[in-house]
Image (tube, rainbow, N blue to C red):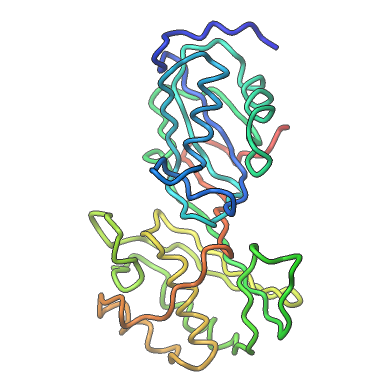
Length: 268
């Protein structure tokens, strides 16, 4: 292992380290540090502090994920005075992190890089298990929907969400975003055997936006909401008019994209 010169005791420093993270959302109470523990941010800050000897580590994520939401490609960054190489950070963090959390890669980036504000877009995937029988081995990874869905109707409805729109009808009452306007770049539905995957890419997402869109599409598939009514639901700007909220455990943060950075793959 590289010799560590931790820098200032409080943390921070001239180096900016970017992390690519994968985690199981079930053991954590979401991303952000909060009174209810553990959270992903809290655990990683404590681990990084142990490695660097810095007492005040600030880890910035690309965005918050709720309790139960998983990540295949969450991105975070922190500033440090440590001279540890990026590769050593990957190994050291993984040696101390709990089993449900791993660093897939790390790299040093310019000081101005910010995991949240430098992001160009995010990709989420939601998976639904379409089966009359539940699957104990896949529990906590998919939303089990035991009734048939009319997928053609869902695909018709999905088209209406794409574009720059006010998504007030599809955000939670606790959402604190200043503006409800987002650009949804794509929304695709893919069926493979008994799993229906819905993938969404946008310049940003409001709280519960993906889960509310998915829940509404499932209601469309059940015949509860007409596919052509989506524009009216968007125009209403009223959460009570849209469909149900899909459970958190079917949701995965797949990727965060940044201008000037090529697609980032695991190197561990």
